[in-house]
Figure 1: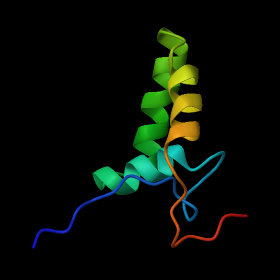
Figure 2 (figure 1 turned 45 degrees about the vertical axis):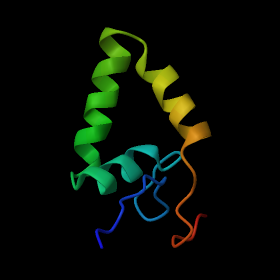
Figure 3 (figure 1 turned 135 degrees about the vertical axis):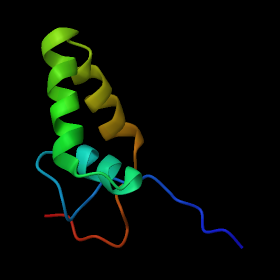
Length: 68
């Protein structure tokens, strides 16, 4: 049976809400790359902030990580 990947906010690799860390873990990419893409979206389009806030609300915390 194939293991299903689930998108969670990261408690291990987080700076603000764990969104970029969680997306990085889900895509097997360094979260720094995701953060840079988010910064570019904020600078050029201003929509990155909206995406981040919505993701912070919608994406659940990873139950296996300890959030501080």
